[in-house]
Length: 418
Image (cartoon, rainbow, N blue to C red; front, side, top):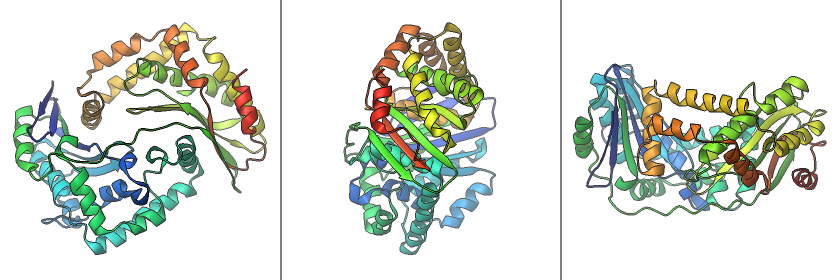
């Protein structure tokens, strides 16, 4: 059973009680991510997430790790464009410890100068690793091309130069001003009671500011192309379009369309491009939705000689999908999405994260029955509307590798208009 309480401070607490399990996943979501950052401090949200584990007023970095691992728990965090999240999974009797540690790092992190300098080095290595991996770097270039000169298009990691320039004072100020109570969702799933967690959160999170925080800058999709010739074996390529936001009536149709095009081995792109033509090892479609925009795209990795044939075939599949939809593939895509939703319900971690995400996006928790009902309601006409809305927009092409034979951008645009 899911219950939600909003505290006087503005913190929202949500529990998903599962009496038949022995664990609890505790998830703290803070609604501030990389798209809230000015250019000069790009990467600060991610650096702060790292530094939160490097010691508080009462715990060293080693003590944080040891206290959780002494009871067999796991602790981690991540940063996205919209949120920074901290989470722990423990046995049910160790929830007080988990809550104590997460509350401590959110309110009492010291940002010790020596630790900060070391962690900057770690983050800079992470940045380097991302750009050394072509199949990751091509997405960074895609994002900055689709949304240029704005927070939404900048890397979550930031640049090495920007990370180096962030001071301890700036970090502490950012955490104090942006980690405000109304932005915090505390979500728990597992063997836990709602009243207990509400009471404990009220006692544990007392020092967060109840007002303030910078406003998010809205995203503005532009599109275009990025090409980088690099001496590697494969061309890594992303072809994308502006997608649909979280609250759009065609949100579920977008996900089903992505599944039909490139969501598995039975998808159109996989069958036509890999199985029939042997042009790629990896190809898939993706869709992501946000408060004010979305991404819909296709990733492929192919050889230098095969790439000249690849994009024309992809364009052909995009152009014909709306007019050639088959009831059996629509139902298969729906089944894939339904199964994914229900399989996630078996995980306390997935449930805690999903409930927090729903509260942030919709202001309420959507249960699986409602989500499945929305999936089932998608029909052929909605999928046609979705394809027309997405694919009639300006494309974004990002490619990295031996790109000599990649279709010119102008020809790509023309190919998508046929």
